[in-house]
Length: 171
Image 1: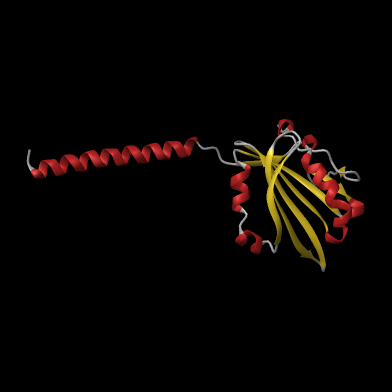
Image 2: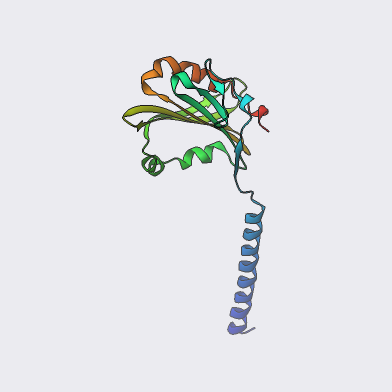
């Protein structure tokens, strides 16, 4: 076999492998499900005392404390990747300041991660806790907001509420 024939054969084999690889990658991409968001079952957590359900959003509201817990369920996504996506650029765009971040575990054994942030609104400082509790397919996302000057009253009951989260109660 000549050198030219060997080159043509090598090129043909390479082309066939390359096309097969691209086809497999595209097929794999089509098999991946797109992450979706929907309202979470509000009973997936026990609300802190003084928080009631509301028709304004999915979650709980404490009117007397200007505090809210918004609950979403993210499907086809995991809490670790979502948590990692919240980088300094995200915080800067949303005018949020990082106070603390870490891992958590609920009483039911579910794992998660949290961010404690602060932001200014009309001259007042608010705390926002972003909590992600989940597994390989579903994530419970809690957005909790309350005035910083009420942190002494609200922080402990809210943290106890977060610990009651149970993924088995999601749809």
